[in-house]
Image: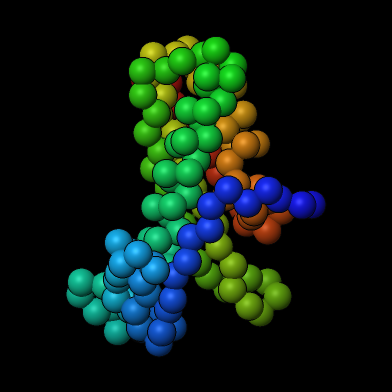
Length: 143
């Protein structure tokens, strides 16, 4: 499937999960450390690739829901996306991810909230990129 690229983000990582990653503009610049739960040092003041993925996915998913709400003419007061990304061994002996999201939408009925979130999930490039590869569980809450 051909994509008409509108924007490209660039970053460099050195040292893997116990190293450093930085975007080319320097706005993202973080030290990484494998968490103790995964057998790593869990250094203070560091983050993980899963934190970075969760933050990016939450932001992108929220924007996709906002975009689709306008397309559906179901305009909420606000949309908040909480995203948890888990990592662990899969049944094939390698590693995989899980995603749990809670999407809270203010100003719409539960039915309309579900329509907006479902449409956002279909439109979101992160959702499309991991479709069929990552279990994504979405809790939808009208507030």
